[in-house]
Length: 142
Image 1 (tube, rainbow, N blue to C red):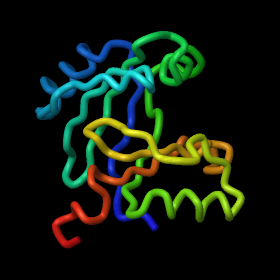
Image 2: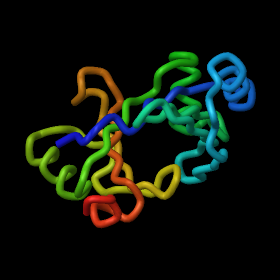
Image 3: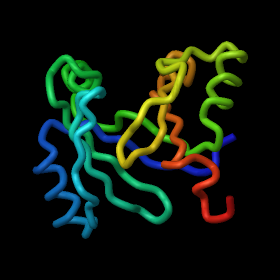
Image 4: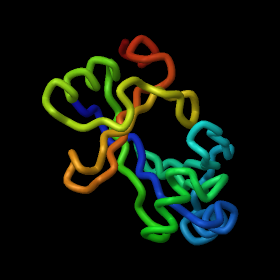
């Protein structure tokens, strides 16, 4: 079902400071920052091998990341797995009794199609499914 870990999402209070830290201390090469208005976040990603790390700053305190920061503070927010056929995977999970936050995909950072699985159904871990932009046909071997 999972192809690979697509990214790890970190909730941060100050995107600029966190970005600078990863650049200066670890040599991260950041992608262009992006705002995802419907999710209430500013985000920036950097690659680590085949995967990425996503730094997330809330655009307002009532956003999901804003609420997460208020309750838990900075740190790991979610794990994202790359999948093919995200609609099919969501339907399969729902049929299996998995509680979904998103019953259908939304547009995420970088034009990906994404959806969240509720942490209650994933042993306390907010889990994101990601289908790269364009779906399976856009993959080099697809």
